[in-house]
Length: 356
Image 1 (tube, rainbow, N blue to C red):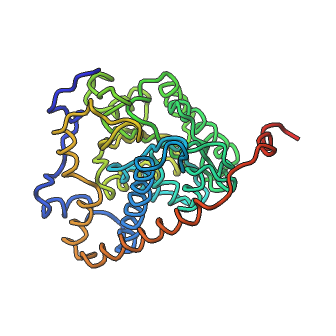
Image 2 (image 1 turned 90 degrees about the vertical axis):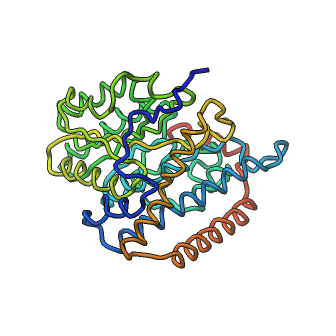
Image 3 (image 1 turned 180 degrees about the horizontal axis):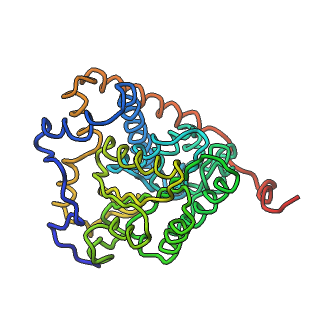
């Protein structure tokens, strides 16, 4: 089992102290072009994603293993939702997304619904994969979401392909390509970034650096301070931001997306955050130091964003309470309704497998 220095924060030096909310309130919020409604939209999706994934975690932890509602395991973005949501908020309708397995926030913003994602997890016949998968291996080309590949590095060449097609057709679309710190060491990632830079493809590479590649900490993955430092070697801009600050993520991604949309080629944006639990709901994460978890818990993207919204006069505790109750009811009702829906039947299993 790999050992981690308890002080290792995978090279991240936070720009604000989580114990000083007034200082945080002025960081990355008032300098943004986001309107009050934009900020409330971001808050809505942060809470919706957390509420949905907390429910999935609860079901995985409490269901009857002999008759499970979720056959597979849960792969959640708890504590790192700001990366997916801040990035997705920069997109236009015809842009594309090459997702990772911790991007439910992005999928919700791209138009998939809570019902869609629960039907996927519950393996229902009307779900995105028609009951053939039981967690996060889904896509939707109508929503411009590429199907997820478990070996995340393989998503980047696919993202390049979509970006190349957009450029060839003369469309003004951008592709976001998500991957993790573990995937950053894969050869396909390096090849994809080099290719995209050479041909100035309209793609933005987003490294969701959550500190752990399953059970391997970042200091056993690479010897540099920031993964974004590799961008200059490919000939593209690179930056590192606070992945727990949804507005800071938005600001960094907006600059990169505009750069790509204006025909200037790709960028690499590294978002430093923390995976607040095991790799999946089956993983008890006993290898993760408690003080590391406690530190990042104090930097929770939702509670800290709430403090910023209060300090800037955008929202108050009453709004937060109502929003959480509203979305909890939405998710609970969806679980009750979708759990009663039919699953796939054997006679349909070869549908969509062979070309007709």
